[in-house]
Image (cartoon, rainbow, N blue to C red; front, side, top):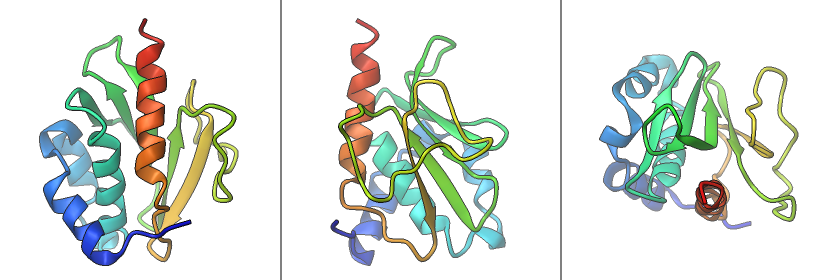
Length: 148
């Protein structure tokens, strides 16, 4: 497992995060002081989920952001990020069964979404796994292939 260093994290969050792809409600959600310790990890994760395609979009619902192919009522969800607290967030991916990692867990109570199969919880102390952007791309391509 390769951890991304702080310089790479900052670069990803400032240069690759398409704010227009994320939506203003999501930015507002993590703008408060309580998010200071976790904000960078959150922004980097969102950036990696969005950089898979110009057609990727992230939208805040009530307690999670859903990452979709396009921004319409028929959009496919390839990932979701639950933001129930400013201490941690949980990411769910649409990944094939053969994708394995020690940090993957089953869906936590209240944190599951149809079609998402692998989950990972991240705190401010956690390093984002080096494979994260690969997972985002695999999940996006898997859901895109289902559109046929």
